[in-house]
Amino acid sequence: MNQNEKLLEIKNLKQYFNKGTASEVRAVDGISFDIYRGETLGLVGESGCGKSTTGRTIIRLYDATDGEVLFNGENVHGKKSKKQLKEFNRKMQMIFQDPYASLNPKMKVADIIAEGIDIHGLAVSAKARKERVEELLETVGLNKEHANRYPHEFSGGQRQRIGIARALAVKPEFIIADEPISALDVSIQAQVVNLLKKLQKEKGLTYLFIAHDLSMVKYISDRIGVMYFGKLVELAPADELYKNPLHPYTQALLSAIPLPDPETERTRVRKHYDPSMHQYKEGEEVKMREITSGHFVYCSEREYEQYRKNDQ
Image 1 (cartoon, rainbow, N blue to C red):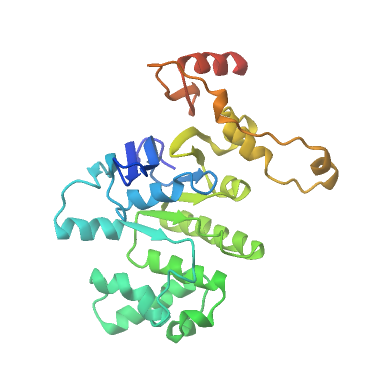
Image 2 (image 1 turned 180 degrees about the vertical axis):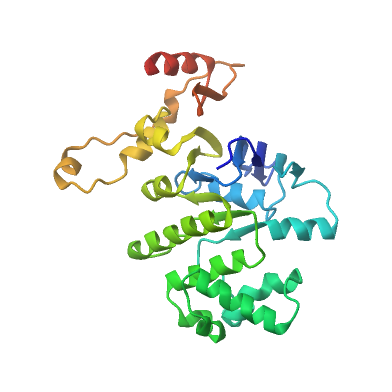
């Protein structure tokens, strides 16, 4: 990870659905964070908190309601020519949650993987295309003979590897992994995460890893952001977040992780988060504040002073 080089900058990003109506949903409500080149930023929170919407807005599957997404210093959501959009789509790729729904069942694996290669003209000949597909299959732990099969002939873990190969095909700089292991058996999840870590090391990739499994997120992430109802409530290095969670919601999430010791698990008290504990006065500024180096919490000035006091 290069802490000096920001690959992605998210500034006050908002994604509202049914804006201005009685049924308005503020899925992402003014969040800001950076992702450095070569790191993995984990984004966690319960279902419906806005983490997947954040990923989809970053990659332009949704147009942002407000705010900026800067990738290599350029505004992702600004006006772009077809050529600029094409280049952006090559540099930023996505691995989707459901390996069953994200692969076209009517296409052979070779054509699924090579779709991006064809669109961006990255193969000079049919032979080069075939060789590149076979190389990608072997990179993700499959065999070149798999190229002529259809998605239904593979297990969930194998399908997700095909999805990873498809994302890698255009040689991206940045990959958004949107809950890439949640639809897989526990025995397969670690294999896929280890593959992602290996590929990152070999190819210098940068990841936004979206998930709700906090134990697996810690394993793969350099830093972790915690979302709650569209807000980023805590952001810290992975080890720091687990050792010293500050926001009550983060504490509640971590207390819900089961421990392998039955005796400890039987007597452990889980924490519950009540958002009403935050009583803010009218006009009181609530924002992300740095409590200790690199450890940010969404809080008021009063809460900030209390966090600082408790940390001493």
